[in-house]
Length: 508
Image (cartoon, rainbow, N blue to C red; front, side, top):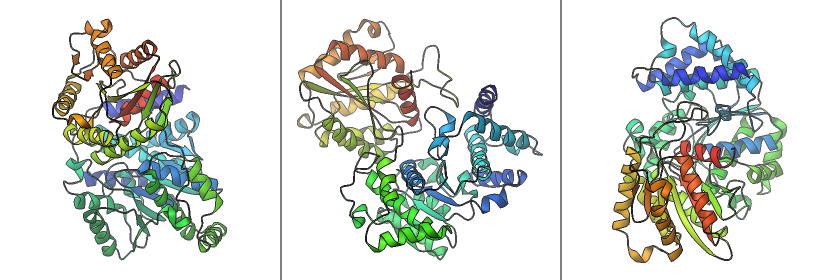
């Protein structure tokens, strides 16, 4: 659709255009100004919103909430970030990305009116802030115009100064597990980070969180007390007799996200004015259980790129374990999940070789990420035997913009050096190095396609590879050459990497 493609081009241009730094607090103010210019302030105040902040599990929690309420018969709108393959993933109606037609319709409605704003507020700030503001306004325009029963809104960054914090009267606010991420913006301590997340709390609006470290919980409770509201800690699923329920999203950590989602839905049911649903929930709770629709939602929830296993279409002995973890805490959770999932998925005969396919943003600290991941896998007796570091495959706002030419691998070489340092200092008894996996490493060193690339860096059990497509192709070649070996590839470190891998192995 031409109008949709032009919209994507306009977003890409907005992202890549030069800009200047602007105070964090100004982004909420500018977003509010945009809403007023579009006459959306009053309609937004009437929109039924569930607002979710946090460090880990925001997207998963929102996915659980959306699935539960949709299974309960409500028309849902879901706004999340970032997307993996298509910007339309950020805007979901009843669980499905918005159509190209609707996206283009509301995109150009907002774009043309905001371009006419006096002054230069539309283009102020760095590029990612401009895009974030516009997409937030676009989401609210969509949800208001399409008359959803409930809009589930995921905070993009922090909380207090995030563009989604233009919501002044949500029905309920939630905060997922907190950890150290975006410290250059949010603060260097858990207390400071929690204070930023608690910035979405509003007077008179219920707030719910999950078990937190004491420093983080104290900060959340302090803000709740200032607003004279009660901060609830979500009850575990065992409180409803669901300790053994198999969730749609895999990993033990998802039980915490699911419990928060249930608490948010219960509170929404009690405060949203939908009396029939409220009575249904209250009746179920009286009998220490959940409505059937809640259980259906927990079981059917899906969230691509998080704890996802995909078996290669070309090689039955090649599996990808995909998780968009990118903070120190989530690295550890990811390692535990990978160990559990790869053991459950192991071939009954033959050997396994556990391979890491990794990249992260340069603003991340590999000294915080890589050790947590490596040690978690080792503790669970599933050590990484081969680590591959790859440069980005896509660029700009849309994944359809593919990097061409020779990629700069200088950052990946830094990641590789950190991994090699970890290898040099490892405890031998904590790691397994089978003869098969040693052969795989040797095969990499002997591979003619890579050996002629003089920029390639190869260590004892790791390498920097020139591109993501060539990495996937090499894994497929190795899988075909070693049919008795099950290659179990953990893809993590960046949602951008996850999106690129999904594009290459699932959608092409």
